[in-house]
Amino acid sequence: MPDLRLHFSNRQQPDHPLAAGVHRLVRQASGTLGVGVGDAAQGALLAQFCMDRRGLWLQVANGARGIHVNGRPVRRMALLRAGDAVYADGVELVVQAPRPRLPSPQATADTDHGGDPRVLLRGVGGPHHGRSFTLGPPRLVGSAREADIRIDDPSFPARHAQLERQGEHVLLRDLGSPEGSLVNGLSVRDAVLCAGDQLVFDGQHRFVVEYPTVAGVEADAEPPAMAASEAVGPAPAPGRAGVRLPWLLLAALLLGGLISALLWFGAR
Image (tube, rainbow, N blue to C red):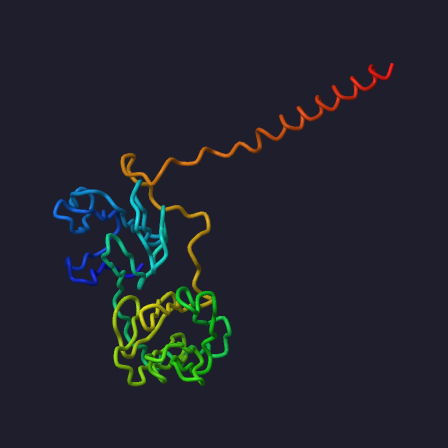
């Protein structure tokens, strides 16, 4: 995982680095939010951020309400990526990552995957949620009719930015927009986008850059458990379908035999 940090959008608190371990999000006695490692954060627990080799997890405490990630409510837990916006108690916290360096011309010339249709920009929020755009030829982002990725908002620039492939990277080039774009939570003009980077236009149009060579999180991976006093909720009881099924079959056979006997002796 890259070096991540939590950024308070309203500057209520300084940025908090997310090192490996558990980071508690609490409501302090003053009513403000605070983030700290372990018992360093005193107050009513709202949620906690758990960082390990598999990624960054958000776990919501028992009874806590009003926790959202990118505008979607979270009741128990969510896997976060750089650029996600977490809302709690009316405060926005953005997961930020360092801005990657631009690749050298030689590095991009050696590995050119411009024709690979699996390199794409996938919508994860806003009106383009669920849609995918392949990143081969240059893609225009804007409100113009000819835009490849159209942001249907009259206040959005007609020609906001352009996405183009260069070797193993995707380059974001600003076309003179007034506010730029967000890459992994940071405001940028021009940037190089790597696999997993999150790109946000106009605050609500969210996309993730995906490459075929990047393995996702294991399907059976589970986040680290909370302490007993802070657990999200009671763990579900282990499944016993394999134990119940033979008994159900035996009961059905016995019931069928009993009905057959009653019909046989009743007929005589």
